[in-house]
Image (spheres, rainbow, N blue to C red):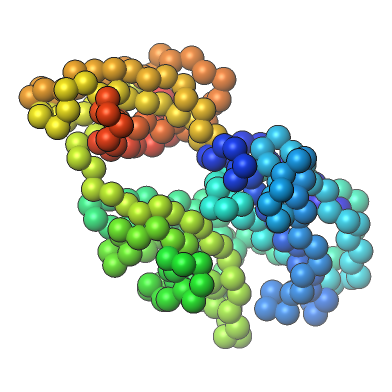
Length: 277
């Protein structure tokens, strides 16, 4: 049995949440032969197909495995959301355990390039294929990468789809030549920041905002979309330095700093990792 709990999400409202699919293999550990056992259902008042909203737990049916059977779980954000989640497995016996194929996925924008980065945890993968689709259908190859046993993290760079919103698909090729889907992640179009923004030592710095605004704000959000603080500042020829390390809030995760003008124009944004606060 699998308990799938959504702790918190980037989105809020009707599209917030995650979803999960459970697959079973009866051939002794070949992921390409998995079949769908069960998918999450709309839970805790959610209306989307498979949607499990923040603060909610969906429980699977009892999973019966014969010796040598394997279970594979595909976890995804609902409607492009990104969530913290917990998986609790109970009453397990027999079967097999597959090591992680991929984890710690991140997508970021930098200098007109989108960077997709992840850690590889399974030596059965001999090649990764990264595909992109702006429509959610017919994804096209972006690039290929061969993992190295001495390199735990992998990264690819995409400068063709930088200004497009869409979904990246990561597939793995096994030693026998078969392909398996590993992960998909939705991302919005990268926009060139109007101001040079960075974080260092407890401060958000806005380099020389100049004449692009008169009054602006640094809005700080948790990863679940909760506004922590909105700090005003005056634009001008000098660099702006905004202290953020002393803020008190209940969420102990990462923060997003969004810099905007008083009329709502976004000047830029930056993630403040918990390890740097």
